[in-house]
Amino acid sequence: MKTEATGRIGTAVLVAVLTVAAGRPTLAQAPRPQVDDWVPSPHYTPRSSRAIRYVVIHTVQGSYRGALSWFQNRRSRVSAHFVVAGDGRLGQSVAENDIAWHAGNSTYNALSIGIEHEGFVSDPGSYTEAMLRKSAALTRYLCDVYGVPIDRGHIVGHVEIPGATHTDPGPHFPWDHYMRLVQEAGRDPDRERRQRADFLTRFSNVSRRSMTVAQNDDGHMDIFYVGQNQVILHQWQRGPNQHWGEIEPMPGNPRAQEIVAGRNADGRLEIFYLGLSGIVYHQWQTGANQHWGPVMPMDGSPRARSIALARNSDGRLELFYVTPAGAVQHQWQWAPSGALTSRGYWSYPVPMPGTHAVERVAVALNADGRLEAFYVSSNRAILHQWQLAPNQDWGKPRPMDGSPLADSIAAVANADGRLEVFYLLGGAIRHQWQLAPAGAPVNGRYWSDPQPIRYAPGAVRRMLPLANPDGRLEIFYLRADASVYHQWQDAPNADWGGVTPVRGAGHAAPIKDLIGSQNADGRLELFYLSGDRSVWHNWQEAVNADWAPAQKMPGDPRPLE
Image 1 (cartoon, rainbow, N blue to C red):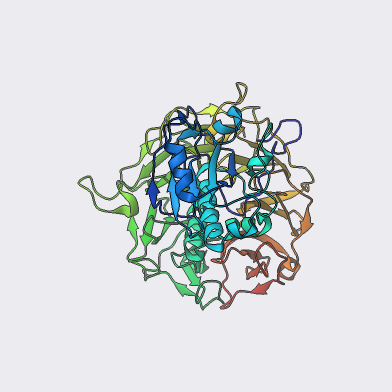
Image 2: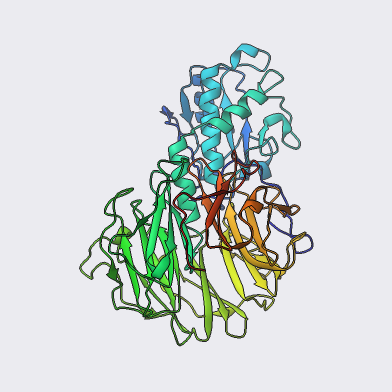
């Protein structure tokens, strides 16, 4: 976790997928390999914590069947969680939520899962490809589920355990090849893309005056504009990661002051409009990636100054309104995807407990599934409140630790699930973060103190945090001189590197606003509102790579400022 002295992570997380706390699904969780033989061992200790930090690799010094039999022998006093045969057969002797007696070190036993491999330390032929692939798939699954970093500091040999008296898996174990297999195990690009898109729903979408963007279920993006006469327009990529088509009015020609878009649990996009009279409307796709239905007022016809949209951990959308009087109200789908229930589709708007004098709201999803809302008050003080349990009622608002002030805020989730909040005040950027996922206390504290982001520029007018597919957050700054800069975390959950201009953004100058999203393949794409109200975009040329020069969007949309 980050230390207050440096803002850095105590232990670098070198994982190429986004993970969250132990025991919860991860952003690219590999499937669990099938266990062929369950041969329970009596040699285990109940695990009091689900904290798993290591996967320990062993060599049996014997056969697959012999190892399973020995672990079952009451005189052996040893066990391992899993045994892998030369032909790829997988046996299990101890449940993962129990401690196996495999490492010769009680501390490491308690913090690890042990995997034995059929064969002998002295025989390089023991490590067959079938064995290595099955073992790597198992290790990848365990790393994803328990948040174990995929590196040689956490996937270790028995010989590397402090105080070890064993030499396995031995000098012939192909570590480099094995680690590559672990990285590649269980890859399903479409599943990973959907999980990345679902991860992005941890960030609230806040209504904007000019434009917003969302990713469809198949990965292609839709962008929505408040156009001439405040009619809502949209255009979409011709396919995932592809060029953009022409602009069309949304069906029904809705008119709005601000817009926000999100994705339902079944993949259908839904857009919410702050109408010209302040009433909130919505419109949704009739099926994932399909055409749009009619425009309808939200149940209860709420009136608002601004909107934020979030998704509960069970998939239900929830809307948050800042009312004309400065209170916050919310309403939610009764069932995921707005399915009809005996109570209808949506709740009626109800007040958020204890809110008043609020200017803006942002919402993010905690690692344990609870939504948390952050408010900019009329005196610029920042408050927050959270669900008392996932998908449940809300507590009362409280000041953020350190009493930060802001004109605007953005709340995002780190790869490990810790929320991080960014504040913009008078052109300066500050941030603070949860010290542990889900706001768990660390030495009696829940959040870091607010502090400047190292190297962040001054004179910032807009800030836009996005998530890269490897888990690193990246933040984009629109400065007062209309230039665009960005900086990113050095590693997932880590400190921030230096600031550089976004290559190619200058073609869109002078820039007045920007939004962005992730393409289906993980490349970030930015959209700029230029001074003449034309819209430009540029994109990473490859994942985590440099940026292509900005180009005008087809059809020459002219959103309102």
